[in-house]
Amino acid sequence: MDILRGILDRIVLIGAILAAGCVPSFIGQYQQRLGGMLDQANRDLALFQDIANRLHGGDIQRLIKHHLASTDPTFRAEGTAIQTMLETVARLKANLAALNTDLFSQVRWIAQDGDAKVAKATWDAFVPAMSFTPEALLFAFGTGVSIWLVFLAVWFGTARFMDLIFARGRPGEWAVPKKRKREA
Image 1 (cartoon, rainbow, N blue to C red):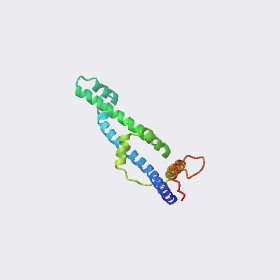
Image 2: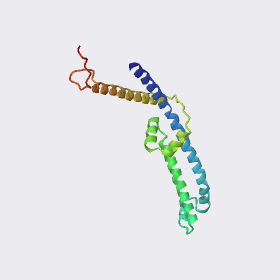
Image 3: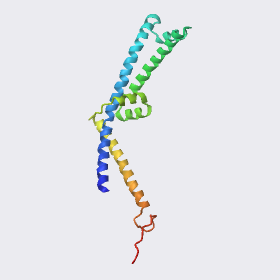
Image 4: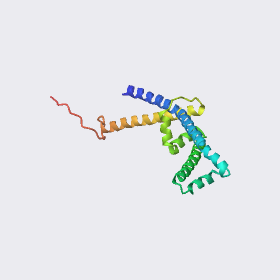
């Protein structure tokens, strides 16, 4: 059993370090995806900003209000679409600003506040890569060792639990009764 544990714990340690080492790459690809989405949203909004520049003194909010005040349902729907584009640009800028920090804060932000759809799309196209910056290496080794320690705690906790249940004849401990040998 010690050989199995020895092999498994090394596999868990190495696998956890390698997996954690790919996290900075995932975050970089997540940021690139957000940046691409922001670029597209800005291009789409630029057409309406040009209209606002020509007809509403450059104020896109006045253009939106003009659309929303219309009696034409199509025109009102366009106003809602422009407002949604404006909100999307603001949200994407805020998300990218939140990711403009250290690796540990980026991981926490993505886990707590990240966009699940963007994360899934990033994961679907994810190309694993290792980063060898000091911060990325510290994260990989720290996370890998933490996962390894959890594995060891579970392994030894389970072994201890099994020892308590199936105590090996130790007095005072609950045990499954052993079969007695018949004396001849």
